[in-house]
Length: 110
Image 1 (cartoon, rainbow, N blue to C red):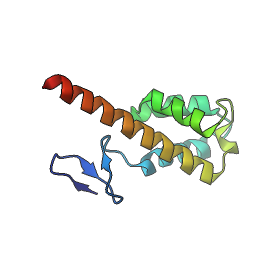
Image 2 (image 1 turned 135 degrees about the vertical axis):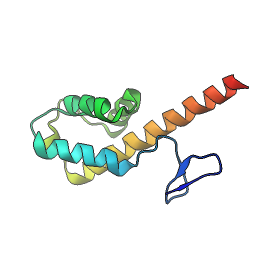
Image 3 (image 1 turned 90 degrees about the horizontal axis):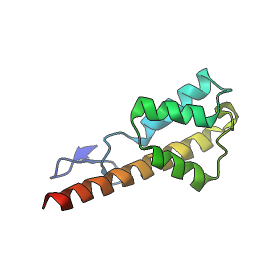
Image 4 (image 1 turned 180 degrees about the horizontal axis):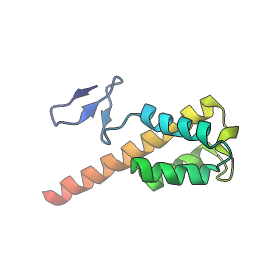
């Protein structure tokens, strides 16, 4: 992880990380909840994730739609690969939403 000339974080793939959190951090939260609360629905787990990580609720909603996951599915029933995919999609959509927000605020500031 390094900083761009504008002070934004750049990950190993060379893309800008506007939120300052890696997809692995989202995966860690989901994995912890899966281990500690396997019978809890994805709806409740993701609501807690929003509170804990302050991530974009719209990004989570879009990730669930895009992956075709059921909100009432217990997190304990998800495979590791499904959790990884969910974490990465949440991260990507959250980062994209933050990039759009920053672009809009910089346009309004001109």
